[in-house]
Image (cartoon, rainbow, N blue to C red; front, side, top):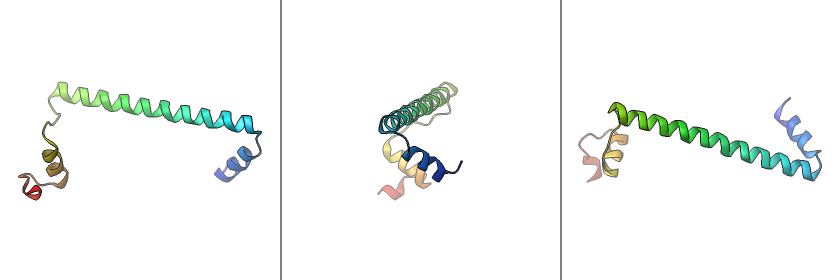
Length: 75
């Protein structure tokens, strides 16, 4: 099925079924996001355990993102 066919099928549903589908999709997105957050948290915790996590200030983070090792771009 193409996306347009799916949309057409949804549009033909009764209001109650569309509402149910909307709630179902919202709950699926929430659950998927929870799984992503959990995986990210586990990755960060493992990095801390391995000693590979970096710590620093916000300025350190910005300098790292900009590739500015001495922080001179922040002055």
